Length: 189
Image (tube, rainbow, N blue to C red; front, side):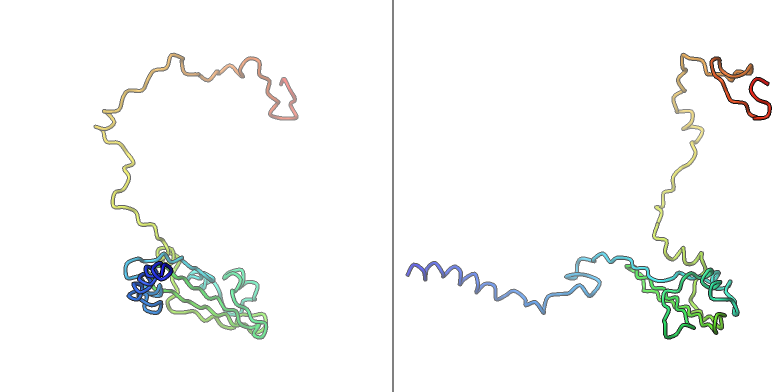
């Protein structure tokens, strides 16, 4: 009888758990919010080669592979089966911003550049920097100069007891020996 009475609270606890949701009914992290309340931190992921309009404008058909590599950088994708094609993909994923994808393709005929395929949405250098700049300065800018009233309110500078050092016009300090400036003249000229 005692084991039955001892197991009764355990049965009551297990029976009370039947109202809990099952694992498949719990919200997931795949959306923007967890449990509809918390927004998880998403790591900024930048992959690939950053190419701008200015960089691509310097590349001309007929350039050798080495010169294209100097101007655009090493391609992210090169294929041993398609040695005449270099791919320069770029992807950036940031929290709160749409994902960006760009692909620049360089096609070669032997060692010379045949064609460069550039997407229409390739940014300029300034557009790219402003797009990735996350620094948002506050509305209050720091003040760099004192007004006349603030300058007048400052305490006067303290006078020191020692006089300020003056430059001696008669030569080096006593007891110091300096090497000659010109090796031909020697010391003492």
